[in-house]
Image 1 (cartoon, rainbow, N blue to C red):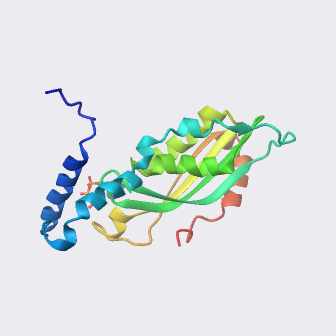
Image 2 (image 1 turned 180 degrees about the horizontal axis):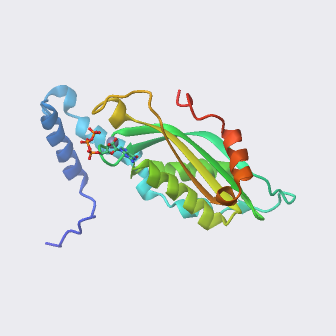
Length: 201
Ligand SMILES: Nc1nc2c(ncn2[C@@H]2O[C@H](COP(=O)(O)OP(=O)(O)OP(=O)(O)O)[C@@H](O)[C@H]2O)c(=O)[nH]1
Ligand SMILES: [Zn+2]
């Protein structure tokens, strides 16, 4: 029998068995009619919720456009909704991402910025790490003058369990290049994205 690598994916059957175990752990009976198909549904849902593990964020930014008449000002995509999952409790983190960059000689299609956010969101995350990953990938692949990423997330592990504090949003930011070095650039970005309070609705 081959030695299983610790990171090897289980079979679909093993995943469904694990769901049956969790259903029993929750106090229910996985053999009752309403729950018979649940393990299969959950396995499929995981393929959707965690699809980021199958995506290549660098590849998403490969197609760029150079015919922009020398446009070299800030480009900002704000209020990109994301759904992520906290790696401590596997509970949802729902929020908005604001992504800005200052191009050098090429721009990227704006949908790719939203795809980049999702590629990292659709994994088990801590918000700080996800924030840094999005910013670093944009900075490394596109080589712009600067990158700014602000995330606002409501952590359901805090709102629906544990300390039970709904309505709290965690705000994180990563500023690189000119956004880090030049306070007026940073300020312009923060003005564009607006006040981060009451934005999660
Ligand atoms: N910094 C940070 N903390 C997070 C994030 N998501 C969840 N947490 C926190 O991670 C911590 C895990 O703490 P533990 O004490 O190990 O877990 P716990 O006993 O379930 O803690 P409580 O949530 O306080 O009940 C909690 O304080 C969570 O609120 C995140 O993205 N970033
Ligand atoms: Zn959590």
